[in-house]
Each structure stands twice: as structure tokens, then as C-alpha cells.
Image 1 (spheres, one colour):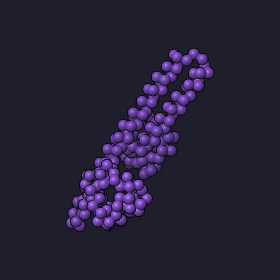
Image 2: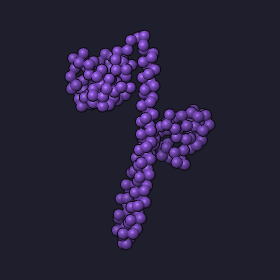
Image 3: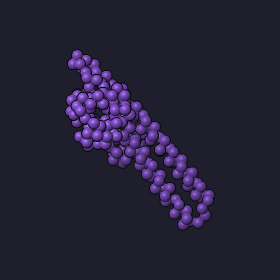
Image 4: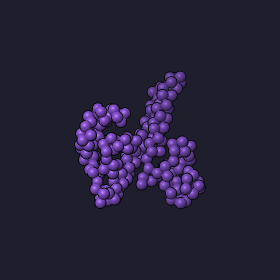
Length: 201
């Protein structure tokens, strides 16, 4: 998916319907800075904005993702290319999220252990130790909470029984037994509770 091409296409279609960036932004209920980012190929419109954007610009969603008006003869080919591109983007995002989970999880654990050891060595008075230890615990728990939220967003869990891939809720992941990134979860397809492994695709 060529974001630069899509951005140029949005800009040209906006001009065709005689709208400024500010006017288009007002119609979509967003800032004109967001429109500028789309048109410069910095980022893509949010999924919730796309239908209304296409309606205003008088294009199809397929046209938007292709960065051009798609001929009916090429519609199926372009639709398949766009779907594959979206899937690839999703997989890349999942990998980045999973990398962030590891960095936050391991980084905060190492920091917490080092912080605790330093406190034990440097602070002799028990009341001061507790006073300094509590913020470290709170920071560590916040980091773990953030890592878990990213883990819930990244990839899928695969059922050991039927190999169905699904995305559990944050609450489900929070309360599930786990060994690393393998969690004991109930599969929504077969209904069995098994050790589901984390997969990116």
C-alpha cells in the first residue's frame, strides 16, 4: 500500500470537490493537521473515518486504498492486492507491538530488580526504605499493565485443539493462567479450554 500515492489521491479528490483541508476536516470532525498528514503520506485515515471520507470525495474504499479510480475490469485484482497489503501491514504492526511488549516487560523487570537491590544497599532505615520502595512497585505494575495491554493487541492466540486463531479481550488475558506467552483460554470456536500459543499471523 503506497501511502504517498494515496495521500496525493486524497489531495486531488479534495480539490475536485472544492474543499480546503480545513473544510474537509470540519466535515469529518477532525483537525486539518490530520488531513495534512494523510495528504503527505505520513499516515492513513482511521477505519472509522474512511466511509465518510469516501462519501465526501465521491470515491469507493477500493479507490482510496488503490490511490486511484479503479476500473471495473480491474476491481477484483485491486481488491485482492489491497486485502493482502492490509494483512501485511497488520502483521508488521503486530510484530512491532510484540517487540514493545518484550522491551517494556523485560526492561521494567530488570529496572525493578536493580532498584530494589540499590535500595537495600543504600537505605538502612526501614521507614525510608518502604517510602522509596512503594513508588518503584507502582511504576513496575504500571509498566506490566501497559505490556499486558500491548500483548492483548498484538497477534492472536491459537487453540491447541482446533487451531482456530482468535483475539481474546484484555480482561480474559489478565485473568488467564500463562507460561510466557502461552495462555490457558477457552476457544470461541470449539469451546474447549486449552493452552493457546501466541501467533503473529
